[in-house]
Amino acid sequence: MKKLTVLVLTVFLLGLAFPVLADTTTATTSTTPGVSDTVYTSQTPTVSDTTYTTPSVTDQTYQPVPAPADNKLPFDLSLLNNLSYSQLKQLKEEIENLLEQKEKELQEFKGIVTSFDGQTLIVKGENEEKTFVVTPDTEMEVKGELGAGYKAEVKYDPASNEAVKVEAKPVILEYTGMVISFDGNNLTVARGNGEQKTFVITEKTKVEGIGKVKGEKTIKPGYKVGVKYTLAGNAVEVKVIPAKVKKENEKEKKAKTKKSANKTYYKKR
Image 1 (cartoon, helix red, strand yellow):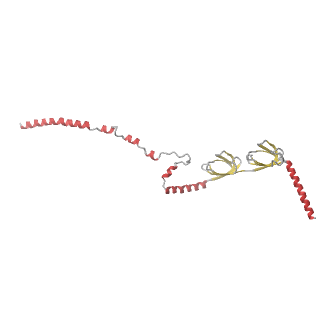
Image 2: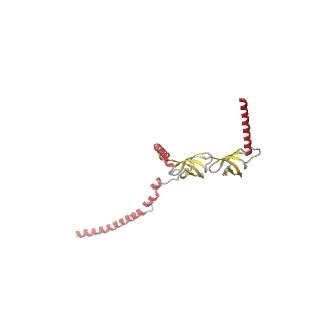
């Protein structure tokens, strides 16, 4: 009887305990967020959000910076600010060594200029014709205005054909003959053998001899002239000797010669 009573009491107590445990489990489950809530809640950033909102290493380190307009180098000069004094000094030494090596590699070319437009220089040598690039850094030693017919010596970089230095002067030729025609711009002169040449008279052409005959202010047919000109046919200098003046000068010279001879003759006697 006692055993039966104990068994019944145990069952009763267990019946009271199970509902309490069930309530406790339900409450705990409802108040504690699940794994799904923790992972996908909008308040906690995901791995994807974190990755794309933080600048990458590429953006911070290797992003190219536009170089200033006057920088002709293939890199941004501001990068040099990050170098130390010793690094800059070493860089300077390396550059000087490279410049010395480059100077040894420079080549020279001689010939006659056939064309020059301010940027492109074409020179014809003995066996070939070369085209050079002239830049604001090109050292120019030119007598007058560089153009076709000038004798030029070009020091250049064979890797780019960039002219490092240009020395040029006009080739001056001479021609003597009788004026056939002159229209103010073109002067045609003929030699005794029938050969003729026409020269271009420019604002820079120096004309001498005009005015020796009173009232003459221009070059006229029949004048004997000596013309200094370039290979391009431009007259650099024109010396004019009118035929009448030449004859008068010859007479004066002959008269002076006779007087001198007479004086010498009387002195001897």
